[in-house]
Amino acid sequence: MRINDKYKVREMAGEHVVIMQGAHGSDLTRIISLNESALYLWQSIEGRDFEVEDVAALLAEHYGIDDDIAQRDAAKWVAKLCDCGLIA
Picture (tube, rainbow, N blue to C red):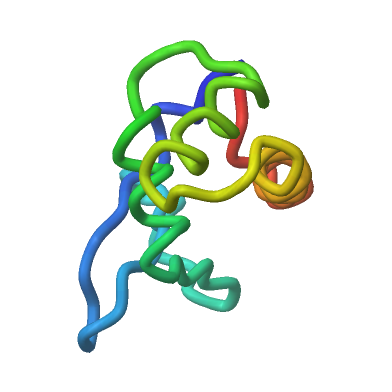
């Protein structure tokens, strides 16, 4: 899977938010805000193919958490990206 290239992270009012590039991105009725962990993951996998296991490895390495917890959290994060239509 891969984050859809039409979505970019921008800083707005001190928060990191996901926006759609181009004319369709002008509708701000639905803003996706990224916390520090989500921003780290987004920046780490943006522009490349990845699997849930790759995200889990990033979490485990960066935060020093147990592999089982990292896997569970990674699966939830990827599912949320899918729910929001951010994965191509």
